[in-house]
Amino acid sequence: MKLRVSPSPNFDARTDDVPIDMLVLHYTGMETAEAARARLCDPEAAVSAHYLIDEDGAVTRLVEEAHRAWHAGLSYWRGHTGINARSIGIELVNPGHEFGYRPFPEAQMAALTDLALDIVGRHAIPARNVVGHSDVAPRRKMDPGELFDWQGLAAAGVGLWPAESDDCLMDPDIIRDMLADYGYETENRFNTLQAFQRHFRPARVNGRIDFETARLLKGLLEMCGD
Image 1 (cartoon, one colour):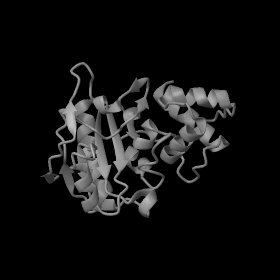
Image 2 (cartoon, helix red, strand yellow):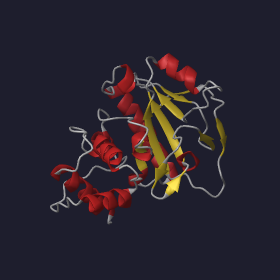
Image 3 (cartoon, one colour):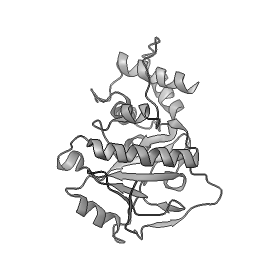
Image 4 (cartoon, one colour):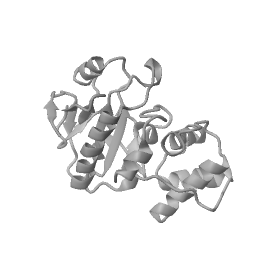
């Protein structure tokens, strides 16, 4: 993998006692790759990620992994807040829902797969800790969104993809507890269900409890032994 370098000033020091145990995926949500790269390197924007992957598969390192990049913002996963401190962030060039959301090209996904496999291997990142921005910030974010190929990424060895469980637990309180058990914050169950569906049931993202969503959630927990 050929790696470009375009240093961003938008980072600070990691905390020594916090391990790198998460990989967070984003889309840039800007009209062009050039605009996204400029913003990620603009000190006034105060936002960055460790890597940027263009639609043609070109990979640019913006921040060294040893530093804390500013990509996740207000965030939560599996009892932890401040996800920047424990994660590697990757931005994928895509205009996002605001500017003409579209599928992620094959070349871009291939480059992501190679990079992600390297990252999760070096840092021993658990599969359930490979997440999207919307997973860790469901009330604020939608990226990388329902067009992102989470299933294909999981098949390549990065992240999880569940089979439906035979059980179907439709009680809203049980569903909320199951979402929390997997890792989500559940302050707004509608937003959290949407985030879950964007990741694991992208064909219909409606924030509602239904049989398929409930079975997939239970199947995911069964994969994790919860």
